[in-house]
Length: 135
Ligand code: ZN
Image 1 (cartoon, rainbow, N blue to C red):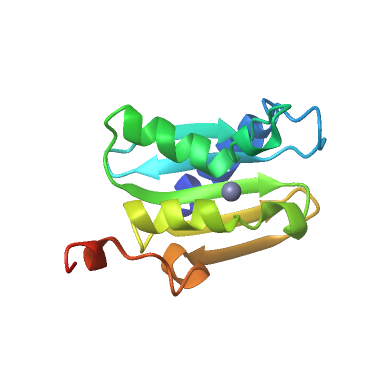
Image 2: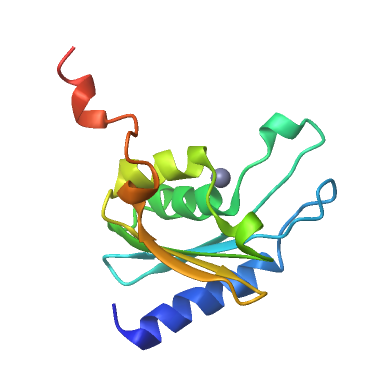
């Protein structure tokens, strides 16, 4: 991925973070995905008074891309306050490997934290869709 594309994706995630709806935790996360057709979809975390109904920024962005018929998700940028709030949760990691185990995951904290990973490496023993067909 070209350096300018990486920066643009991170900037889009940083901007999406401003739309977080998090009146309960106060935590703001933004995410942006790049798809194989060159499109970018963004998401922010959305909380609910019934906590279990909340949705992470990463899943919001990925579900937007998939529901819009976008191409394969190649990369996702996640921006939070710090490392603690920027690493994707297990549910988001499972969704990442569903759509592309080789997806590039760029984690950035506004405090300067920066780490890149491949989705599959973040959840090495993930629930594996091909295994379902062997039942
Ligand atoms: Zn999550």
